[in-house]
Length: 221
Image 1 (cartoon, one colour):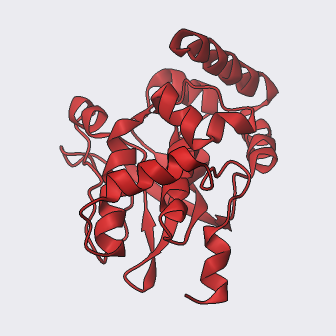
Image 2 (image 1 turned 90 degrees about the vertical axis):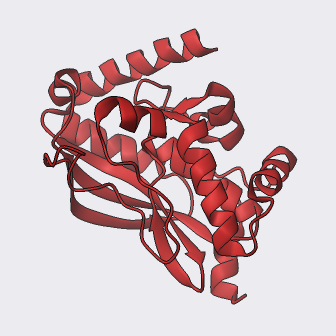
């Protein structure tokens, strides 16, 4: 493996890839995968469905993104779920990093539209990882149960393809559009994200979201 790729195997802010429990879990989940692609598929499906998707989770502290904390909580939003997948991948020797983009989600509940001030989600997060000899994208955000309940397409692992949120739902209605790519980060850029959200959502909406997340965290504890 090249020196450049080894850079994406190291622990970083919010990426708990060096913890013995994370290493053991990664090996257990990937067992049976014949190569890095097979292992990646098992890790992807595990994170997608084991951690249920929710934006009502604690998010303002770096500890909220550590893999073991998210797994114990059982709920997470896109950055937290992606941080878990990156941690497991790196623990298994698969180079991985966090990637960020602004997206427009045309199927948002009214409370979220009001909080966000529209349909755009800034700093949506997904994973970029080196599998099958190339960088591929993977989005573990929406779990199987949520997609079934909402009538959304499930993002499924397909070797050799990028795994991105679909443009339409199962009924053919517009769903997700990617607007702007912010590049990759080695770890969770928490201050960068919070600054962007305060600018785009407003301080009060961000504080309201944080209060919802803290309350949900206490209920889940």
